[in-house]
Image (cartoon, rainbow, N blue to C red; front, side, top):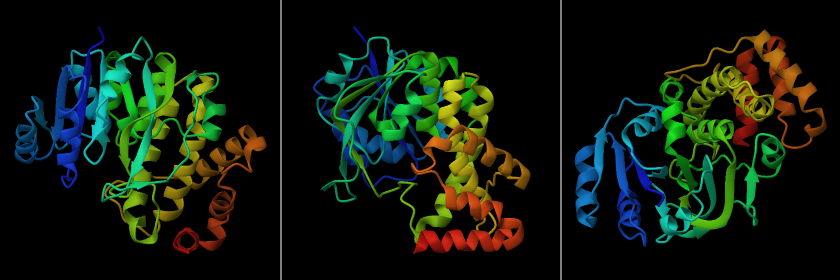
Length: 324
């Protein structure tokens, strides 16, 4: 029998905690463990008690999100970890269905239904309708049609993976879903199934819903993503997986380079112009045949011209485009 642990993370957001915890309580197949990482133990404990959920609570607010997964690898005795972010909701049969698929895959990724901040169903993104096995060799081509690495609340992660890469996870900052996905590829195959087993909430804290009023927060997120992506490029040696990492790194690098000149963040990734040019050339050579598929050509040209425009003016041009 495969043992399953639920990992609930609740940092600074509690408005949807009742829904998240109730979805653990009413599973048709009980979790073998529930681990909660939070910055407010009392709030979380009150809701857990309300629904009679037995959980181990860890108040470790200084941990980065990747480091939280490293801690779970140390603490959990279960075979697989099922992350649940505090604003998402598991469907009642999620654990029962997933258990059938947790048979050696390094990661199982499933589809989701989307809800808004009022828990109303919304149409947001089309998801693949057929199951697929993702390998190092096909991950890049599959990634062109759908970002399989997104939304931790739709993952089941092999605990041994977190244990093995715990030291690395402790050194990373934020880009958790992508980090886990890449590490899973290095450990074995990933299974995607089209069953929609989670309600994924769009809007409450989604860092990629880029609008003008959220841009200052998002650019600080991108700075941490650049750091993590750059680390992964050094850490991973498989050429197929590096090919998956490079365009993600390039997107975040461009945004950080252009927007750091007009926004202040607690952590800023220092992007040198010649470093940027080197990555631009590498990406154009590597992905020339895909330049028409969401390649950030205009942002790349804006970054290349920044010494003539000034980096601050180039950043203002990009901000204006985003805010338009």
